[in-house]
Length: 563
Ligand code: ATP
Ligand code: MG
Image 1 (tube, helix red, strand yellow):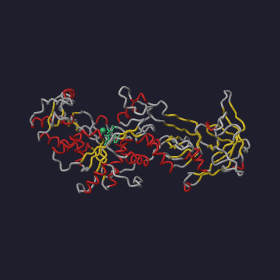
Image 2 (tube, rainbow, N blue to C red):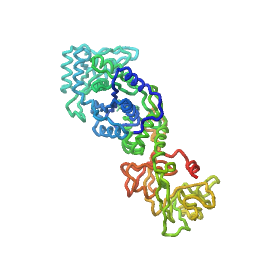
Image 3 (cartoon, rainbow, N blue to C red):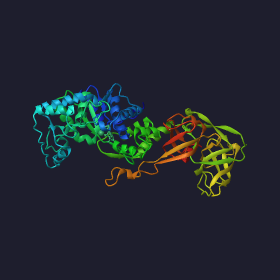
Image 4 (cartoon, rainbow, N blue to C red):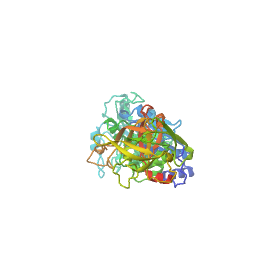
């Protein structure tokens, strides 16, 4: 694991609190938790929370629990549970023995609800959801007390038991906390603690038809697990008084501290499971792991490395203020990681045939190519060279301006790791489109240098036609055309989908070694960007690559350094 920063950075406000709690002896250990609801796949926002919670536990030799907050049976499934576990592991974190489910606590939670009723702090309410909303009051006016608020403890206990037994229909009754209908905090105006749902649960089946609400479940689950610090995003700030009320009212032996931090927002995307789910279910993307989605599984399939995502989370830091992170910061994190690690290879995305007319027919040779420009340890490989090659169509221009340093009629260019070639003839089809180039090569320039010291300005990549397998390459662009797709009140976020976010190139040609690349292998296609074999669809007979990210540095800079 390489998440430990090499430079000592000041601690963020959460780590400061935790350090102080350890120093003062308030806690002997630090126990955090990551509590996803299994109602969808994890996204980049969750990665921030995972890195924070598991990171803090690791730094303090504590532990971090993975807890599924599974109290909404309608939308949850074990498929999501498995996907979430896989993603957390892939990011490089491990919960050890500490795998938990809120549903494991259903019996205990029921017991706590009974205790609240016995203490006169909760009551069964027969108002409908709509009636409760109407009687909730406004920010300036208190709500109306429910006519059922003063039911006797005995009646409440009996009704709550009947709720559990399934004697009532959905929506007929709820259990509410008896707190304060005049509180300025709406969440304290007698919030619902239990509701009736005649829905099977993916783990408890039909054992229950009442399910506890988030605000009741979360604090008690934290308490039961001995969590010391319960870290959540800022939108839960108003829930904190309720979190504390439940634990205080029940006088629990342990009272975790809830601390809120700013959620991660990235432009040109949406980070809400509900919206990501819409994209999947309505077929706007190919699945949760579509490489255009900023889900963890999408990023993995796209070719992002776990280290790059951890580094990204470290760069953006943890604070109290809402902010937007530029997508470029994420792209840069993977670019930096791959720049040091990814082997360099040659691949032609839009091939144009080149015939080297003075190269003997039927012959070929092997040329040595470096696997990494800055890392001699990465070694070299041999590339076949022959009379017929492919180059990138955009590397040839017929009426080229003076500043065009690639191939043009009568001009000389270097083929990377190979020879200087000069274009002698342009072959066109009936429509006038260039279909082939005839070139001559200078055998004296083997390896890419002329013994007479003559220079060429441009270096282009190529592959040998007879040796280069055909490949499919998928180029991805941002999924949305606008920076803040889900902040427009008038327009649905899906109306900002980028119709050109996926471009499939079917006829690419890659150097021979790439056919035998394994699943999820990453490369730099020289001059083009970083690519990854597709986790699902890559085959030796039909290589499939995803573009992870384009190159920031131009070829010019790279070759200037080299020669
Ligand atoms: P979504 O709004 O996407 O459905 P959620 O908060 O409902 O997210 P949960 O499964 O409940 O999803 O989240 C698990 C944990 O991840 C929570 O502690 C939540 O605060 C955190 N989390 C979710 N989204 C973000 C985000 N964008 N940035 C940081 N943490 C996040
Ligand atoms: Mg949630």
